Length: 130
Image (cartoon, rainbow, N blue to C red; front, side, top):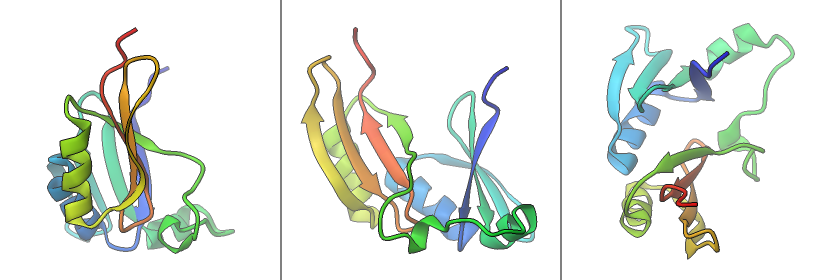
């Protein structure tokens, strides 16, 4: 078993892709002609976005839309970088909201957290060193 991809349901797939490209420097892999699904290059695992309308089709009982939740959902995406303060500043400049500023952790890692305009919680972190 291996993690194949992560799908995040958002109001506007193209806008989510554009935000992640601008804020985090990720590269767009694919945007379906319908605009309802798209993917970003992130290494071995794909980060994908799908329109809430697809979520409604997949979950007839409904789902929690992260963008309308006053609190972040109980998961986060971690993006590893060598320069957390610069990545954090870039994300804020692109429209993310700060959840936790860059902090040095006891295990030698630097970590910050931002929330995207779509409500997704993103951890920016240096590689774990020990």
